[in-house]
Image (cartoon, rainbow, N blue to C red):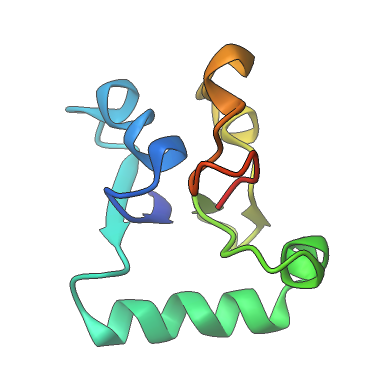
Length: 100
């Protein structure tokens, strides 16, 4: 099962909802609901090289995908999903043109 770490307030995360609805290959984890899930995500974010540029740019790094083999990616396409369309990306998550 592919775990997706994110939050409903993130438009990039919310965009995935319809794509994964009813698909047993995915487990959606809202990092804002349980401290344990947030801690698990933060450990990934603090230790995985895929987050280097995210950390350098002050981002959060969601949505984050953890494959069954432990591979971590920030790309929906890597797990067979679609990213939010470019015309919707201009505002970013915070309205400043940057991603989460």
